[in-house]
Amino acid sequence: MPSSPLIPLPPDAARLAAQACLAALAAQPPLPSQQASPRRALGALAGNLQLDAGVADAIRIVRAEVPHRQDDAWNVRASASAWPLRYGADKPLLYLCRPASLQALRGVLVDARARGIVCNDAETQASPWHKGVQPALPAWLAAQPDCTPFDPATGEEVRAIVRAALATLYVERQPGYFYLAMHDEAAVAVPLSAADAAAASLGMYRVSPPGPGPCRVRLCGAGAMLAVVADAARLLEEDWNIAVQVWSCPSYTRLARDAQAAEQWNVRHPRAAPRLAHVQRCLGGSAAPVIAVTGYGQHIAGQIGGYVRGRFIAVGADSATEASAPWLAVMALKALADDGALPMPCVDYALRRYALL
Image 1 (cartoon, helix red, strand yellow):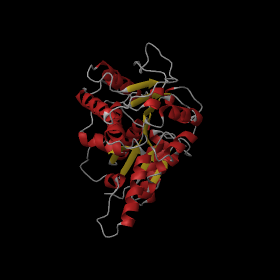
Image 2 (cartoon, rainbow, N blue to C red; image 1 turned 90 degrees about the horizontal axis):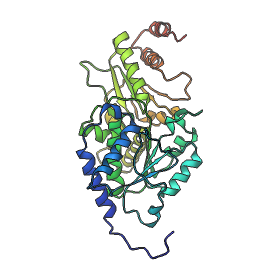
Image 3 (cartoon, one colour; image 1 turned 60 degrees about the horizontal axis):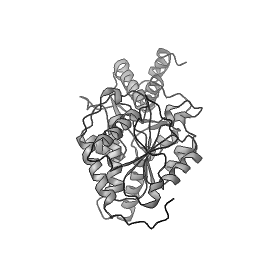
Image 4 (cartoon, helix red, strand yellow; image 1 turned 30 degrees about the horizontal axis):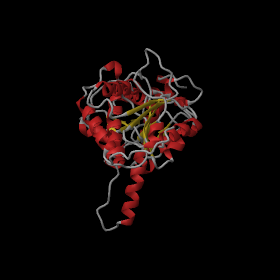
């Protein structure tokens, strides 16, 4: 540990470094399909930043608890600790880690001073817990006001969230940290429009294009569950001719917090034009049932239930039924039947058709 006095850094050092990283990320081409999973995409993005002579020293990358392998998707140069942050946060921090327990995560946050972009790939390891982490961990993160947790589904979502984190934490200098759960499942690397990237960083954006008629069901998925939701939508459309909207929800927690903030602002400013939360802008135009799916406990997806019109169903790892495409399709049919939009025998037939009885 250095004993000499520290030389104060220019107050704009971290901001300038973040702006340089943002410019470099904006110039990077779309991710190739083999790097489409969030974990591999992050490794590619970080590696490209390190290879860019203009920004190679503009970001601090820490690789803790993650063994180095030649074929590792996170094959990037990194230090083993974020200790330099204790002597001046002059650069944005990208912290690659694998804490499976809440205690281990707290150790990571102490090392990083609860600052920067914390990326956890515990989901890629064999574990008795869903998504590789103790159930208490996501619930604790959702309750921390200085944490903005995300569960990205694709590599392009990772790019959008990392850019939002750099802008929020270092350009705008807002306190706290961003947390990303990183899975390594293959995902379609579809480039996001600027509008969709901005919406993803706010918590959700629509994946399916607008249909010719009104949608009858909205299906929302986070992380690896987005692919399952997309399969359920395909079953509903092909087998039942039901129009479905599919939404990716990288952060149910951010959506809920934004809705709570809008609600509080409206109460305190009764004469002003009411504010509309992002989840209400996305889902408020219809009363069609909404099924929100997460790989964590269903309470994580359930956070947005109070801000959704119409019937709402949250599905998670602890739900009574598994979060598979056939079960999600049946849940959607049951929701429509409960609303009187379908005859109930359709649900009985679907249970037999998909061999779920």
